[in-house]
Length: 387
Image (cartoon, rainbow, N blue to C red):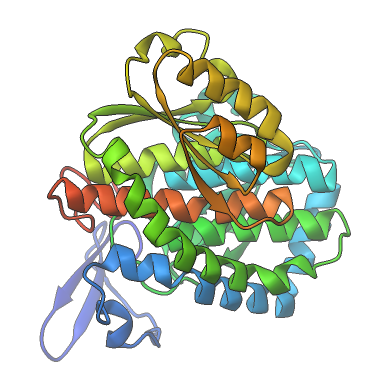
């Protein structure tokens, strides 16, 4: 269905009508090939855990799809010619946009403007033109704030591309070209596999923009699978340090900053504990005052950022706080943090993606420890269709 339509349903037919004039609309049906098994827990206690475990496989499928995609060539060609590039999303998708902008800068030497969809008009409406491209990012393709930004951009002539998980959604219909996220059903309200596939999609685009070899992507799904296996028990041992706190921070820098934003969002969503994600370098400009004895602060790091992250860790630990580090196995990082959750060593870009998994698991197991349902957090829905 499109906006301005109403449907009449019975056991034998589905008729669509125009709200404006009441006329019946004839439209060819689309076949959904997903099986009911994909929408069941498959032996897992919760959809969220199942979807965390599905991440390596959907990553494989996305990479294979992009290797064969003709649309991707058109997108890359247009991005190389664009005057300005904007990545637009909300919530988890916005965090992926911030990662995407860092990927593009580091790999393709190209500046990108990541922006929350609701702020798009205020910041950029008067500046955009037909020479610009916006990549709009949404799991559902129905997020109202994102669709509002699309309408604003269209009026200024901007070219509309998108990253979407749901085929046939409104965003796909409003886009010149849309690239699938290939995640299948994501039932749990907290986004997991769609976030990692958004990161992989942006990283793949950055590699193509920078004419860089794509060999790194061959190993990525296996690295993700290994990360899930080795992180679970380590994360569970960290729970006593965080689960009873109603307030904490998740800090990152550079590539790990948007990962910290997403880690904090997951903790807020399903544990109901307030967790603020921010730059580690900004922590001393005020929030450091919150640190008390055993106060938990999670630090996310890539290999090259370890010296700066250690500086942030020491700001916390010397004041009695408890620093949990998520990053590559490193002697100095282990020596300075109170607890290390090691991430498999790889390129900094891929390590940043792998570090998402321990943060997802921390949120999941902390949620269970506090007695909540991770699939259906209070006050939230999977698809936000109101302003």
